[in-house]
Amino acid sequence: MRIIKNIDEMRAYSQKKKNHGKTIGFIPTMGCLHDGHLSLVQAAKKQADIVVVSIFVNPIQFGPGEDFKRYPKNLSNDKRLLNNFDIDVLFLPDTKKMFPQGFKTYLEVEEFSRKMCGRSRPNHFRGVTTIVAKLFCLVCPDFAFFGQKDFQQQLIIKTMVRDMDFPVEVVALPTVREFDGLAMSSRNRYLKPKERELATVLYKALCLAKEEIENGEKDLRKILIRMRSLIGTVPSIRLDYVVIADPETLEEVKAIKGKLLVALSGSIGKARLIDNLIVQAK
Ligand code: PAF
Image 1 (cartoon, rainbow, N blue to C red):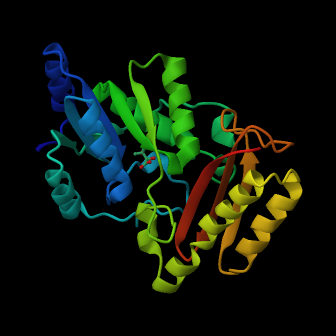
Image 2 (image 1 turned 60 degrees about the horizontal axis):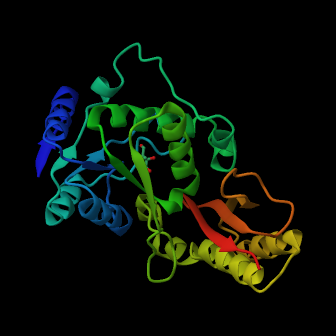
């Protein structure tokens, strides 16, 4: 595994591989890797000749008072995990090179970036699209891999790729869960043991909605009330949102029909958690 820190070296490496007819699979991450990330690495290994993973804790996707400064880091473990997968490049760009003084350019996918997580994190998605666009320009991937846990993020990135004609295929892969259903996330490390146990109520609420919808429940309000009251049994959860939305537009639906995105976000202790399920109504 080659480690590249310099952005010009990264671009030159990718250009050279492409000139030799190789395809590049790319997994952008913020590190503190878990099995969710590793499932993306595995998929990239199958689909592309060269696999590049980046680790970069992107300052511009964090709002004031969020966890940028304490975002979990474990580079030596990340390197060990990636070495086991025999990836080609670990790209570790430098913040000052990624955002030189005077940096002023942002890329934003309108509308989608304002919904769901975007309501309480107003500049989050423009930070994500800006860094992902920049990483795409440096790594020049043919395929880029993202997890469905961040459903809104992968939809926004797919939209950006379509609108800007980036020559990359965005591949979204299923959420990887812990044994009890909690979606894997680097932020799970913030949870104390009791919080970790209680956090599973979020997945339980999604499963409740899925079961009701699949059993033919058509009363949207009732489903949302039941989800909220289940989550309410854990008073330490600060619920941000629960929505049942159209997975293509993120617009909250008015009726239970077709394919639905059931999504939520809540905080417990120091961790803000998100999760979702795609459900097919009867
Ligand atoms: O999902 C993440 O870890 C980040 O939002 C990403 C895509 C690496 C951009 O910083």
